Length: 374
Figure 1: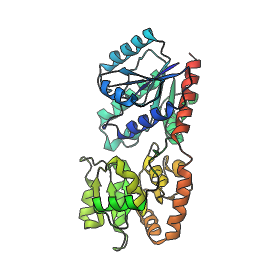
Figure 2 (figure 1 turned 45 degrees about the vertical axis):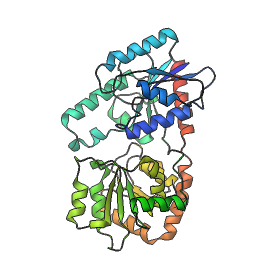
Figure 3 (figure 1 turned 120 degrees about the vertical axis):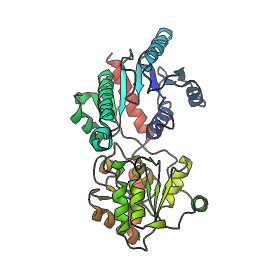
Figure 4 (figure 1 turned 90 degrees about the vertical axis):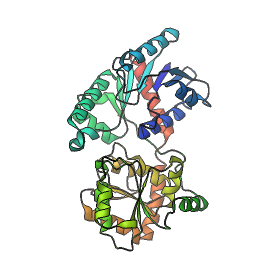
């Protein structure tokens, strides 16, 4: 059996999806049977680098066309067809909805969220129509759909006419490197970024559904002696509202916008934080909350979308539309050392229940069922 996994999204433009695909590849190769082979479909230099160091049973198929290019609709199927002539190909897995919609092979699709449809006021009508059309085409092409959480599965079934038996929730996991870091590493990071001894942390983008404006407003209601709030992650210049709100409220150095942090520094940044605050109004999964828990950091997060499903009883939950509730959650974490310790311990145990080994095993089971039904 040959499983062709498209890895073109392992690129800076797709930070979340790229991390998912990279982790999936590493875990899949450990679960392949002797009669199974993983074929990585991607840019020439990319797939060669990707496959380096992986054990036998992994091959590559070079593809020099972008997922955003119209040409992929005929170039990728041609590549897959040529592969089938050399050696029978069994299945194609696209981790992105911009894909060849007639690939010529049984197809598995990974689905993440419906953010463009859930937050239409922040997305142009053209972008919404293109998203709906492209996702609908991808769903028609797919024999089976992997949703990254039960919440994203329910959202998909409620919005598109997809048979429930064709959609399976397969949870994500934190990278193995997300674990409590030694004090020496924390001190080095603190010196490099001039971090305060104690701080609250948010990691993520500044897109509107992340609810950063509410976080800034809620933080402003804390006592002036509260630890600083650090905001880390990709900064989209189209959405400056959180920064402007902090400036208008005169918060000065009490809130620091760090921008994009080196990925290698994230486990230490989480470990250094007094608490992690995640007020997002919608998440397909909510990986930052899981990463923080895996580092032993106490978490307070929204009680909506997939977040309760991810954190379980291991986090302090609040209504993201209630600014006072968000302020109260932060205040409790600042003042109650015992609560922080309890949440840290619960979070470590909760994070350990998610693994890429389980994700890969479930994904392979879907591959095998899909091939058996051909």
